[in-house]
Image (cartoon, rainbow, N blue to C red):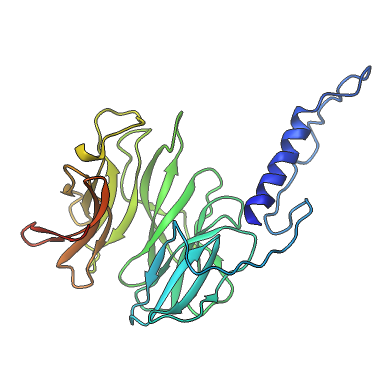
Length: 294
């Protein structure tokens, strides 16, 4: 139902823009003083209906485990759900026309940060972990802000700010925001190119390091058909005390989705091996890696 809603609205806009004026009548001149049309995601100006959906599986989902290990939160078809980690019925935390995704529990278990377009474009929002009214944290109206991750003290959120370019997905920078929404954020990394992706930020448990992934394939422009066996993404680590950046994992098959362990000793990530996605764990003390799932 969500997809149809957006397609219908987009289609109507196309008809309006492409329609020719009536025969014999000149096209009306645009009124420069006329107010720009507003679009409220929650109040669509097209006919819509509700459709019940009952599913047992999902794809392309983001999930997170609560700090006490008892619950998981996940996104499905643009809404957020929470359920016991042992299984059971999922409880909806959001159920609006906005597209909500990428939920992350705060380390103290009180909050959930997530990405939502309910303000008109992708921004970071925060809501109580038990559900309730959400508050907008970032207020970008040009850049898209996604992939939230908490600082260990549950006070700040690091996220990826997207920079569009002339082609494909553009690039990204990591920015830090206070969960209250105060201020405009603090830049933590600077994009290396205009067209190659950087994202997936996450703090180490002691907050000293910021891990993130970056497209390190050759050249400065985006290329289709890259060879994952040669390595596309690599994981980099920013030392927030010195500003030094080092590459932590990469090489053949690449490395993406960095996830430090709670004790700071290990780094889990994914890598492509023989055409399949593998789960790899690296010992951060001496760099030894072990493939857990392939």
